[in-house]
Image (cartoon, helix red, strand yellow):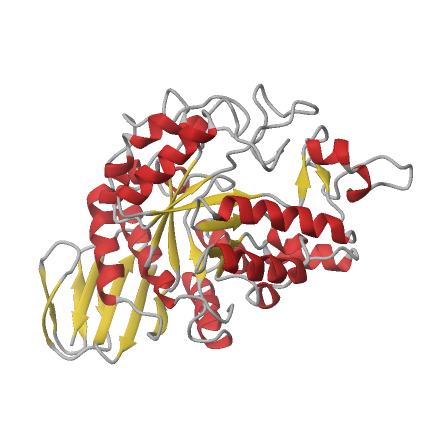
Length: 428
């Protein structure tokens, strides 16, 4: 981890939203009215998908992807003015939350102001044309960090935004030299001490394929030298294979246990069930009870929790990044109460120095998460099929209160009866 990473991040919740689709208006101002509800979910950060103007050339969809940025130093006028953005930041702070914005430094739109001014700062194919290195990213062209002047420009831009916001989520950070991020972090620290850095690292197979092809792609271990937290894409493919029924739960939990043993105790992975690039979890796990258990496992897994706007409504439709596609807040079912309870547990009981053990009962698709610290133990039992079963637990016999709903659970002869609803038990 970066040497000055705050361990409290492991106990926090980030709420991600896309301004264009969060409300029918699609503006910064319209988001403000929803902030009390988001705060009530127990969220500590709001991460805004890119807020900058979008390129017009090679656009995908009718409005273009927010990740095809035309000007890093400007505000997308579709969302409002700089003053409107500053008002939103102030309102988020007034709610007791912090603000994180997207930093997209691997590429720009083909008609970006940066390309117009400095075409030499971009990757070019052998025929001399600017291009990207990933085929389906047809609406962007890649930057070339062999140019020191580019480093200076990008860091100056980060310092500009650091005077307003509290964190950066760095898009495909693995493709940008870690030496750049380390230098940028030092410069930003002088402007905004304690600003939080989140790296979107890449899926393990994708990173391996890039390195085999001779393309720079930092490993997760290397990324931790510059970043406070990073995506859990290193285990995401195993999680997806389990959801598809291709591997037992124990294979996925073994990888979580591997992380716990391979990284320093204070490591921080961003844990999520969905994000703007990943299918809605309710579309893959439609059973309400199973979804409640999976949500509980999310919050108990070591690391910062991510909630993508609409997840609290168990929505199955993933909004488009390329068109107006507002979240339908009237659809789905309400998981807000569960998420509030889990956020309270995360804030009140989990710590960076916890020793965490993951165990699977593959016969019943049951995950048991055991947090141990000097203050006691927190044990979560999550039935990922939402089915009742007798579960063996390494806890003294006795009566325990379920921190989710206040119900009493009895442990006798080293086992308990799980009804199919998630359990979180605290033992002093």
